[in-house]
Length: 465
Image 1 (cartoon, rainbow, N blue to C red):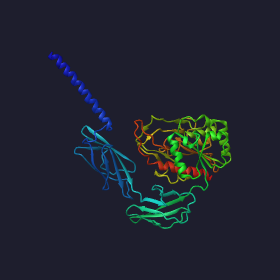
Image 2 (cartoon, helix red, strand yellow):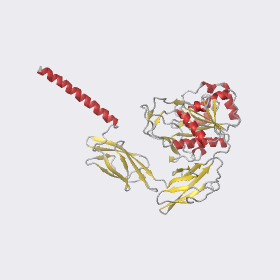
Image 3 (cartoon, rainbow, N blue to C red):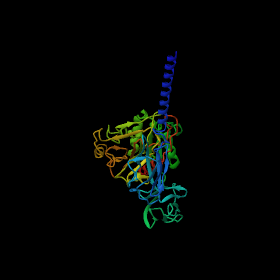
Image 4 (cartoon, one colour):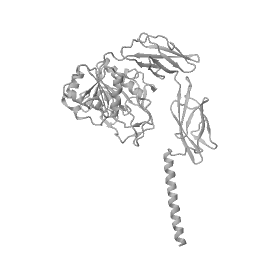
């Protein structure tokens, strides 16, 4: 009997031990694989005397430096708990222009940290008549669009600058913005010039949002709903047209730009291929009409004869609810070599010719319909793609300085005049933040302004051609 009891309690002890181990593992994964209160923590982190904000749970350190700071070579001041060291060692000057990662080790415990450093803009805000401008400190530009029919000849910008910074013309001064205006920013005896471009929408512009629903109120895809709402809020001449109405002979002669943003399915709907529809849209282009095709609608270039047969996007994919994922990286684009193109003006860039569109940590479906160049389609590179499609590749993924990897934004045809089609086809072009697979709302996308401005610029560019 005693032996039996001993065996019983031995088994019970093993079971409890296993439960404890599983629970401990689960708790470990829930906190990202480390104990947030472990003695491997960073106690303080400074750059040139400026203290960083430390999120121990996320392993993130955020440092905001004064305007004018050079962050390319700074020796960090770090205090660890007793006995802890870092890999790499933080005892020499480092470049903090991009996020810096390091690991803190204390015995058999460790924790990974990422340091993100930003330098304050000299201009906190720049508004005219309550409308905020986009300030780009890399290109040193100030860009904004005011309501249609605004008189640009005598406007009074309200400008808030960072401490120690002066600006000329000063806040409240009357300025003629008919042409670009140079603002001189001075701090610590040094001056730099920022160029302000203030515009208004093309007068009398009619932009039509194309959809598969009979009416705008019938749109169900939230990405399409969000995009159409933005259009109607910002373009007084916006209207909705359906594929069915085009099939039935709707008059398109009064429309300057048709925008089809299709996010509902990877395959285009059958009505889009109806001969009455394709012929009407081909005639629309022939008569000077312009098309903006975004997300999965990028594939429409084939059916409309914008590219030679079979030369449409060759890499189409994406998730649909409840699938999807959260990525720890921000997604952006490279338009290196096309920095002066009108559709990219005013975008907030993280380096010359590169801008983010989708913030790290946002839930994404990655709806993509682009051209993959190196391995598929026989294009090999950007030049091969241009020769075979008759288009101009304007952008690729953010890593691609030569624009030889992907075609994410393009315009057609490839001539100096009559460029009447813009295609935006990458998964980062995402208007609506879906909830994640667990039903948790996604964090807001801080780069949505870039998506809106890219779209607005594209519409205005097409209408001006």
